Image 1 (spheres, helix red, strand yellow):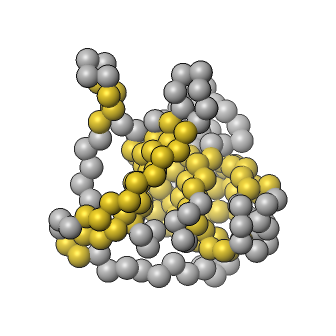
Image 2: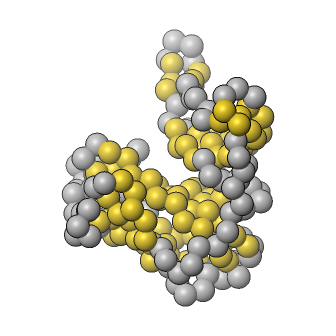
Length: 193
C-alpha cells in the first residue's frame, strides 16, 4: 500500500508505506502535516488476487503554521536540481511531451561532484518510484521503473519510467531513489501538450 499526500499547490509531497498490524488487521499511518491548509491524499493498493485500487481523500488541516500557496509554473528547460549536499538529480525528457502518447522520463542521479552514482539500492522494492500529479489535482500517476530489480540490486545512475499523460496541462513529477540509506526526492514541473 502506498499513501501519497500533497498540498493543494503541490509544494508539499510525502510518500508513505503504512504499517500493517496483524492483530488488528489494519494499516496505520502517523503523519505530521507541515502547515495548515488543504491537502489531497491518495491511497494506492492492490488486494491479493484483485485489481489495483486508488482511493482519494481531501483534508483541510487547521493545525500548525499557515500554508502560503505557491502557484505551479513551468520550469525553464533546466531539469537539474541539487537535492542536498551529496546529490543532484537530472531529468531527461523529450523536447515535447504529448498527451495520450507513451513517454520516457529518465532520472539521472549524480553525486556532489556531478559524478554518476552507480550504487543505488532498492526503494520500497523497486529501483525508484515516480509519482506524477496534474496541477488541478485530478490526475494521479504512480509509475515504477521500466526495469525490475532484485532485493540486492545496486545500480544507477539512470532510472527510467514510462507513462502516458492523459491530457494537456502542467504536471508535477517526483522521482524517489535510495542511496546509502538516504531517500532522494526530486520534483520537476512538466508541460504536456
